[in-house]
Image 1 (tube, rainbow, N blue to C red):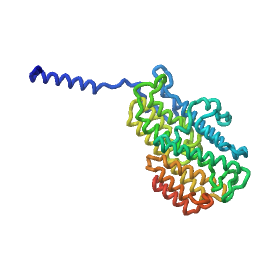
Image 2 (spheres, one colour; image 1 turned 180 degrees about the vertical axis):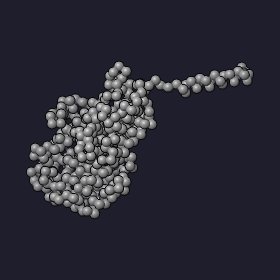
Image 3 (cartoon, rainbow, N blue to C red; image 1 turned 90 degrees about the vertical axis):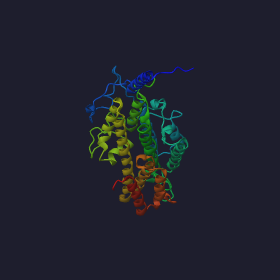
Image 4 (cartoon, one colour; image 1 turned 30 degrees about the vertical axis):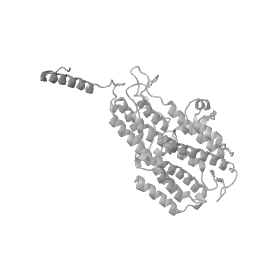
Length: 391
């Protein structure tokens, strides 16, 4: 029933199959782009300049990332309205801004924000908060942010009062709740970790590096991997060159949130962040994934260092503050950064680490008003030990 093959025929068939297998193994997917010389990467090269298609079209789209950044700015501006305009603000408005529902945005000329553009942008902060976590874990953090909106709205009702132990009101120019916590700072700094650091570092520059780089996204000029990297950059800054012309003494560009604190609290390496973004994007064009991962890891590591150093820095400012207002403002910022430490996964920090420090600082009945040097020193020591900052 079966035809018997001779040894010569079997050997010949084996050679043919080996040749076919070898051809398949050696085939390479045609690259999307012409390679870019790494020598073209300089600190003064605008982000979009090098990345164009064969027909001359840009392959960079920063729109969605920049719009989320502006949503963050708009929300922060609204939070400031309690003190700036001496009025109560609305938790429902904050929730709508957070989720971009019910057209909550208005023009803010000082920030170059168009309310209609943001309302129609189709992007939001809520869905990307803690987005590296499981669905249930992420929802806990999103609700936590919305709970802070309610706390902020409640504290804003007392904007005309003077803050004291157990009494919400203003200390200097800062609005505090009844425990002496500046909720506006908790929200702002917590979103630096829960939105910016987590989305940029733990999503886009981590799992996001596994995205396809062989075909264009349907209807777009870029691959998914190219866009993930660009989205990370657009979520950090609105500028074509991040921190252009900056020195240790002077920040050369207008930056907010994480982008500002990298400059302030990572003096050793802030100037290397932009070249790392640029070099990593060139590496994507060159299909050099080892280099892509090297630059991504560097960016993530330096962002985490900045957040940990900022947490310690504001604890120090509590100790050196000479008024309740200065101390309350410092601890408000510090608490927000300490919350954000849970997203510092390169350094192995997590929610338990963060929560234990927060509880040790302000877990008592009177919060800020019960702080002592011992509590603050213990918190700083724990952060130093985890992040090996040597402060």
